[in-house]
Image (cartoon, rainbow, N blue to C red; front, side):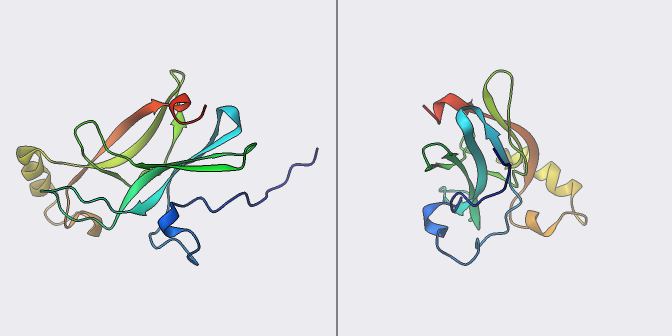
Length: 148
């Protein structure tokens, strides 16, 4: 059997499919996992949460089951305390079968937010002007929760 690269599907949330390019710049996680499935973190439409700043996009977990040619958008990622991850440039399945990513996650604790803003006064990147983030290891459910 020859090894070659082929296009399998448009790996974007439905709202972005068919567009000439992703409206957001994507530098997100992609991995082949169990059951010949692609696990992919990509930008999707923003989710608004009352009392939190508006954001340009959200991170969605997508799976593509290669053998079934089936794409599933599992929706935007949120932490247990409803914080939104951004800039998820990695994805891995750990030995415990959980999916992991390293992401910037919005800071909602007022004291922590103030301390981080003070530390970043003149050196923060443009992406942090409206929101304060911290780098975190994010643990998602086990891969088998997404692919049967």
